[in-house]
Length: 397
Ligand code: UD1
Ligand code: UDP
Image (cartoon, rainbow, N blue to C red):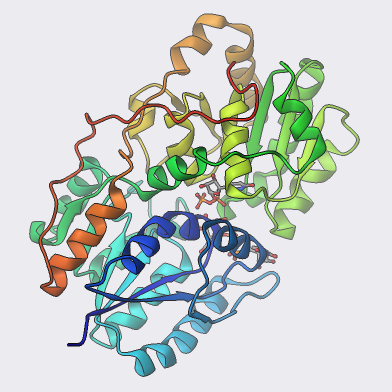
């Protein structure tokens, strides 16, 4: 008897992290034939995650080019994936989130009348150009999806507000929490000596990540804010695992060059990065995934953006939007570092994003789509998981 063939397509670091629990669950489920396709939109940063989770894609489209444009990514993904779709004839294609890989893969599958399953569906800022192009990508994918795996009740409501058919929506929780729980169970040590040193001393740590395309023109402000914070808190360490995009590096690195207590590293393996989040005092970021993981670890997050598609942790008080103004970033960080009460008010472990069972709910929902099984009960945000604890160092603040 032939089993339904489920093709999972992804191409960037955050997609790789968030599809890993699902890819593993599909591979372990005899009811399906699972096929994994990497578009290779990211090269090194994707390989880093694949090897960490032990995933070897069946197909690598290897589309990344230095300084790639959005239309370059989209056109290369559609052309290369179409050949694979024709050859493999999958019953469903799973895409994740809001990248150009996800949008192009969804359109390519839809054009071949293949069912699209959207993992992490329904996030919205309701501002078309922010984040760019992710907000548009999400909306476009929702238009062609047969199954919407919404991480939270809010994301389900967003889809219903756009007249999505309720029967296509399942609230799964976010698979990033499944990944975080897995990574927190590993005995991780930092490969970078300066970070390993941090793991064993009691300096305060200001962890920074940045990469958003729409932030590139203003990104040097982030570098200047880092420098000012490093000078204001000479006993603290400001740590930047730098994204590989050369435009990000060109904007930020000159601003922090030579500042002694700023540590710049290459992108960190997932287990090291999440352990560093657990070690951090505060986190400054424009990342999507970090906004979901850090609250689960009880870390205050200042989001260097004007809006967010992840308001759940803002409402819970652990995440604050601070925009991209240099003075505001410095002032908000200083408030947390100087004012114990302000810090304590934000440093709560809250986890509106998942209970570690998102992949199981996603697989069950896919089984219902293909007629092999039944859905599980929706994720309810009240069902909290315990805060993940990292081993091997002094991580408590
Ligand atoms: C992409 C996604 C964004 C996601 C981010 C996660 C789009 C349009 N953007 O943005 O939604 O939040 O990934 O990090 O889909 N590069 C390398 N090696 C790598 C990765 C990137 O050299 O492993 C360099 C290349 O020069 C590449 C550039 O970074 O051209 C930009 O990569 P790209 O995927 O276009 O954009 P991101 O900003 O990474
Ligand atoms: N991350 C990582 N190493 C790093 C920086 C981030 O593994 O050096 C992880 C982080 O834990 C999160 C994801 O990468 O799960 C976020 O990726 P990114 O910020 O690039 O993309 P976004 O989430 O904004 O789409």
